[in-house]
Image (cartoon, rainbow over all chains, first blue to last red; front, side, top):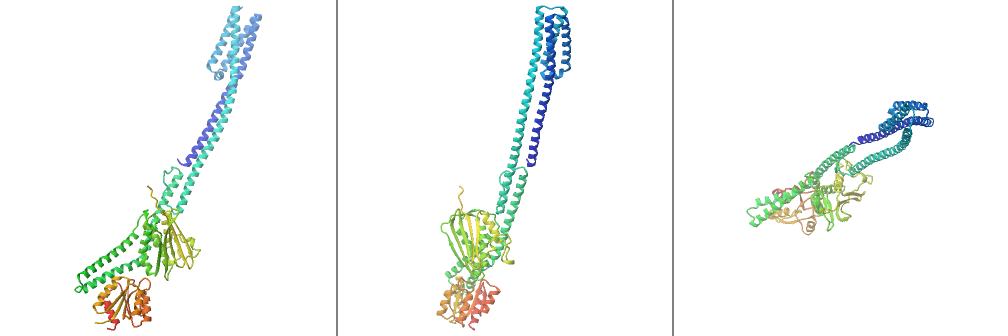
Length: 465
Length: 121
């Protein structure tokens, strides 16, 4: 669900809660008003019943029929009052109690009527008369008492309902806003982490389920951005590789010319001296031709391996072998530039987890840079060493002109170059990307006039099984 | 048949071997070396009429051989061969008074003709 919808929903929920409380409070008030009105009516009724009982007492004392007439009038007026306020009373005490009250009153009135008709009374009738009056009065005062208690209950109840509803609203609002803000903050932190890792050159996709809210859209956007960046980086790596290839070609041409020349010279002598050569010499010639063609095949294979575009394919590999292969590929180019190489490859290196071709590309790159910084010849010193933490270290040191201190922080930036128009400014940034993809590290130290040292750390391969 | 001495310097063994085989047919006395250092040592002991040297070699390269020979043994002719031929190196070699300059692959007949010319034949 979208966050916007969640916020709207939580507001609707709170408003609903408030309306519900209002509705209950209104109902309670309404009920209370009804009850209070009834209490008023009941007070009137009680007064009437009291007067009736007073007349009843007078009649029983003096046996004056006037008192009965008075009672009859009172009963009738009370009955009228009951009828006119009927709906209110029913609402307050219920239909059954109302009917009971009416029936008591009717019964009372009936006894009064009988006594009046007989124009006198006997012991039995008097007792019934007294009992019925008492019953009526007791019933009405009981109801009045109950109703007063009811009113108190309602007041008490609505007080506590209001209190708890208030607590519920506050708790609900706090919980919902806390929950939503937590969720927003969590998503923001996730995105922040992601942006950081992208800025470090890690273009992995966000794994796991993508939420259906606004953050989901942001994550999807970041995912497609990462993918685009990764594609571009791959393209960049490949284009840089082709550029390195151009530099290598001069060396490779030289390397190819030598075996070609050898074959050519053997062939020339073979034809020229065919009759003078003995069988063993002829066989020796052809053996040499075969060996020289193998040499050519090997050179071409190295070159193709290097130039072919490949996805990063991380495998356990021996770093020293990669160093030696690279050196072989570079040897002629270095010879032409009159550059000496010295190697100090560490013994018993653990395997590293690398894409051999990409690391080779980085090494070619660093060595080409080193060669270009040493125009009048020099030495490239290459070393491998075990182990810094979980990493194997490579050092490539040259005796070139060095890098100006103010340029050092920028040398891994894309398009930064000190070679003028000759450089693309991509070599080191691509190398940096490759090493970072390997979860490794690349650093530089340089002194103007003394030379530059690149240090690469690559993670040791750990068998996952 | 001549008894002229020819020195071949090339870090590719086959070059020396093949040149020697062919030149010996013509009666030359041929010695081959795989690097500039041993060649210069031998030159100090023995006079050679022609030195055929590769240009690009580790250590003492063809250009240095040329310079040394021209300063110490001005009568000795130097022929340069190289797999890495471009105009700059050719000009530099010619400035250093090289007798001839051959890019690889070398035509042995041409090399022999050049040696003959070097000897004034």
